[in-house]
Each structure stands twice: as C-alpha cells, then as structure tokens.
Amino acid sequence: MLFDDLPEDYLDIFEETTLQERLRVLLEYEPAQANKRRRLDEEELGSQNAGPNDRLFALLIVEARCRNAFKRLLNAWLLKKANKIQLSTDDPITLMPFNQPLIVYDLRNRSRYCFEAKTLVTNIYHQLRYSFGGFPKPLSPLNPITNLAFGCGQLLHIFTECMRFGYWSAVFHTFRAASFDINQYSYLQERPLRFAAIKEFVYGDTHKHMMTEEMANFIIGLANKRNKYLTGAEIRRLTYGLKNAEHPYVIQWMRLFEEYLKYDLKATPSIRYCPEQIKRSRAISAEANILVDTLRGYLDEIHPAYTLYVTQLQQQHLDQQRMEEEDDEEDEEYIDELENGETVIFTATGTIEDTFQQLLARIIAYNNSQPR
Image 1 (cartoon, one colour):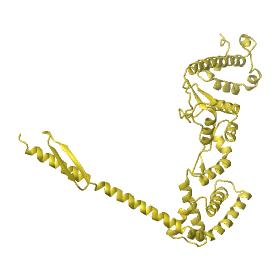
Image 2 (tube, rainbow, N blue to C red):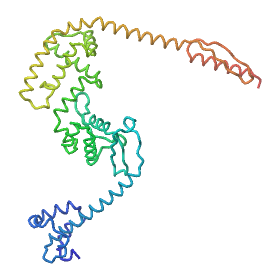
Image 3 (cartoon, rainbow, N blue to C red):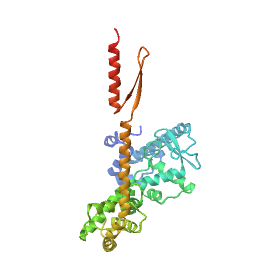
Image 4 (cartoon, helix red, strand yellow):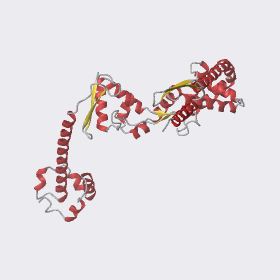
C-alpha cells in the first residue's frame, strides 16, 4: 500500500540491499530533497502531498527503528541467558580470590567472565606494550580465558570499570583515545612504543642473551673502525664480561647502546631525520670512541674471572661425563625365576645391553635342555 504511488525504478534500486546501502543510494539519487526531509515522522507515511523520496525515507526510518527494537530485545534475551552462568570465585589469571571483581559479557558466545580489575589492567598493559628484540609489536587485548580479542564495547566497559576502581593506565587511556584500534594506536604511538621496546630490550631479562650478542657486535664494530681488532679469545672474554650488568664499565656501554638504538642514523633509518637526532648521533660517536680506547683495560681486568669461569665449566663437563660412564659400567645382579622354580643367579659386567643378551642366551639354553 505504501509503495502504490512510487515509481518502479525507485523500488528496483532498493531491492535486496542493506539499510546503509539504501540510504547511500537515496542520498546520491536526489540529495537536496533527501537532506530536507530526513527526519520525517511515521505520520507522514500516508500523506498524499509527500513525494516519493519522503515516503522512502519514512519507510527506512521505520525499518531502522524496528531493527533497533528487535536488537534490544535480542540483547536482553542473551543477557538473561548469560546471567545464568555460574561464575568462579577465583581470578583465572592469578588463581586468587576476587578483591575487585570485573564482569565482562560476551553475548556472541552467550557467556560472561569475571576477572580481578588490577590483574586485567596489567594484562592489557603488557599486551599493548609487547615487543620482541627491541621492536614494538603491540597486540590487541585478548580474553585470558577464550584467547579471543575483546570487542570495542567490552574494552569500553573494562576501561570505565577500571577508572571507577581507581586503576588509571596511561597506555590504556591512549588506546582509548585511538578508539581501541590497534593499528591507529601503533601509528600514533610509534616513537614512545619504540623507545619503551628498546629500554626493555637493553635492561630487561627476557632477551638477555640476544642483547648481549648484539651489544658485543656493536662494540666489535666500533673497535674495528678504530683499527683495534680483537682476537677470538678477547671476543669470548668480552661476551662473558657484558653479562655482568653491575660493572660500571658495562653500565656505560648499555646506556650508550640504548642511545645508539634510539638516535643513531644508521640504527633508525625509518625515523625522520631531525637536528636533535643528528646531534645525539654525533655525541654517541664521540663517547663510543672514548670507551673503545679503554676496552683492552677492561678485558685485562676480567681475565682472571673468565679463566675461573672456563675452568668451572670444564670441571662440570668432566664430572658429568664420569657419571655417565659409571652408570653404563655399573655391575648389576639379575635373578630370573624359571618355570620349574629353579633360580638362576649370575653377576653381569659391562653395559646393560650386554647383560640382557647374556640373560636371554642363558634362558634359551635352559629351555632347550628340558625334555619335550
């Protein structure tokens, strides 16, 4: 009835299309009248003075309102189903009783989850600050139970509840300003994330072995530029000495290596050059030359400790080798009960495989000697 007075081409345009597509096509079809009567009420549906565009807009408004009403009804039903799920009394991350419980609903799976507010904020912080080898790789916050990414509505709820509990995180707040979009967050926070990843790489314990090798290569390269070539023994001694992060000389190299990764032109080719970066790069080169001149003095200082370390490793290797030989050559006594109750007792020497072969041959010979 409502479509009786509409031209056929209008109906063909909107056949089998979504609501957003209908609005877009209609705005492109006749934008002047469409913008003028966008908020038409349902009462004007039957008005004979309204044009085709007006009645179409009214129909679309009715359709949108019906969809929203059914969507609210569906969400209420899903929420009722989710509330029937029994929640655990312990935090799934720390396995400790809840102090400030935070309930997160997942209507897609018709379930709900409860977390400790502080623990969940810490978990999201580590995911947004995740890095590997000095390169930031922020991850979308994941549900610790399902290992699925939180939705935008869930993250907004978590952010609001954490603010109510008093847990304010600058990283989470920045992620909220980026509309919970991980790509936009990575783009807007490129420099802070990179600096934080470098600091974690240099001073953290996660990639300690990798950082030691990278810093050793950095020092060797600087020494080669100044024609102060290191032998293989000196390189091994340097790698051992860089593991002692409490030595003042190593602390200076770690700070310089951090500055190099942040501001040096060769180490950061993707960062736009600026006067500050050029100035810091020159200062790094000057300070590195001073430390390289005192490198051999540090290697001579740690030579006794390195010799003791190598001796201990050799002794541990010899002890382990001797224990393995004792286990293989240990004498064992085997007792085999035969069918007639006779007991065969013998002592075997050599390896366990030889002993088993001897026992098997003894049993076969005994069985062959029995009358059939």
